[in-house]
Length: 265
Image (cartoon, rainbow, N blue to C red; front, side, top):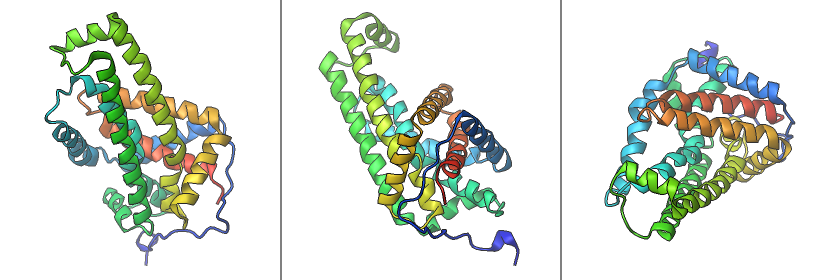
């Protein structure tokens, strides 16, 4: 039996409190380089373009079909930051298999659905989705607080209103501040937890606690990584979301390598 055919199962933890390392900027750069290497070896942009992109986009449009989406374009795009850890779950599995010598087909990303911790992953994914929906409703409340229920007549008019009126400036400041809080919370409990659930025989609580400790031990590196993720998602969203089919898998692969550098196992 070849190595590629041997089942890759979870590794047992000796403790419910795995150690967390402090890493530096060189480790972050190395993780990003390895993320690009994994993507080049196992490109999954077609899956993201053909499956995740239309499902997420049309799902959002369908959910808000009765609303004018113009005031909510930015909050909806920002939601990719909150749902990113869940959307990239398949790339964690690919990086994991490649690292342990199971360099096989890109379709192995779907093996995550056979993971020992699929229930925990689904539960954590549901939590992320709930947080995302809360963020969208909060963004709607911020808009209505400043502009009421009026609907912008055009993109140019809406942009001008945002940038030239006290209400627009107030909405930008409040929205960015609240969105930052949401992003920090999600980054703290999910940046390490999803890859950890795939790799180790632990529960959701242990994975989330470890993720939070990883952020506390590495606040500067995680802040830099958060900025890189947010900036990459914005750039990837500009050409009609198409760039996300490259950005999301690279972020996913890089996250796996960050996890391996930070968590002692």
